[in-house]
Structure formats: C-alpha cells, structure tokens
Length: 210
Image 1 (tube, rainbow, N blue to C red):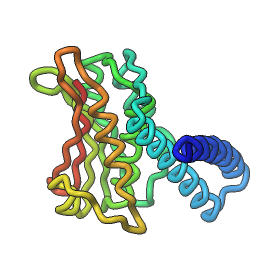
Image 2: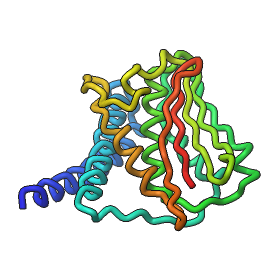
Image 3: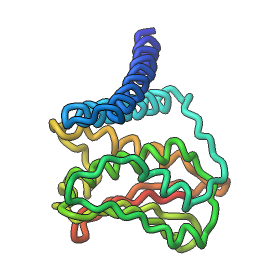
Image 4: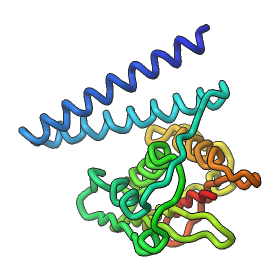
C-alpha cells in the first residue's frame, strides 16, 4: 500500500514539476536572468529524475511497458539535442550521417530520449569544450547511440559496472534507468539492448538497441 502511495506521489510531483518548468520557460522568454536559467535547469533535472524513479518502480512491479514504434532516426537525434542548455564554451554536435542512411528504427522514443538527454546533460556538465551525439549501425544488427565528451571520463567503478557512490552531482539513478530501458528493448529471438561505458579521450556512453 505504501509503495503504491509513494508511486502516486512521485507521479503527481513529476506532473507539477513539468507544469513549473513550462511556466519558467515562459518567464525566461519574457525576462531572462541567470537565476531564472538555473531554476529552469534544476526543475528539468528533478523532473527527469522523477520519471526515471517511477520507471524503475514500475519495472520492479512488472508494470513497465515500452511503446515501440518506428521513428525517423535523424529527426529523433535533432529533437533529442533541441533546447538542451549548453554551458558557455562547450559545443554540442549532432552527427546524423548514419541516421540519414538508416532512415527509421523501432524503439520507445519517449524513454530513449530520456536516457540520451540525461547522458547529454552529464556530458555537458563535465566536458571541456565538446559533446557529441551520434548514431552508428551495429554489426550483426541493431543501432548504437553514442554520447561522448572530452572531459575527465567515467570513474573506475562505473566502468566495472559497480554501484556508484551517491554524490551531490549524481545519485546514479540515471545509469540504472538507462540499463533498464536498454534491456527492455528486445527481439523475438531474445536479443536485448545494453549500455556500454568507456573512456576514450573523455567519457563515452553507448546505448545499443536490437
């Protein structure tokens, strides 16, 4: 009973934060200020965390359902990076070359976009000057979304799939959510999506979908 009430409270808080975010966006368009920008970013981040937390809860309850449909990959990439706040001096590049060649793919666009935007926000926070979102075709079938940056890279614990310690900058929830959504994408033959982390002149997160 308490779990159900907690889930309902999270859902209501998520909706309220979304409404707050819309109001803050409208206010920023009329009277932009650094304080207002920080409030917008914070509201968006907390709202995203609540979506992730609710998805993890529903997965534990066996009630998480992915809505898989065909989506134009190039359009999806550009929608994912649209309206993300860029720190001064950091360039965000969207590489859609392979997406244009592949055309469309079947996946849950809403949840995958959440995974990629969370990864992009982290990359933008840690990058020195460059963040890139790209898509490549996976050998043997599938697609790979890649978020990379030129920052210090992932901590060793993350690379070894260990639980990350909670810090003021991160709760580790985003990575749990990413792996959950990746695994939820599966083929009839039993191939599942996955998340891969690597350090290569910075951090690189790959979301592989079958």
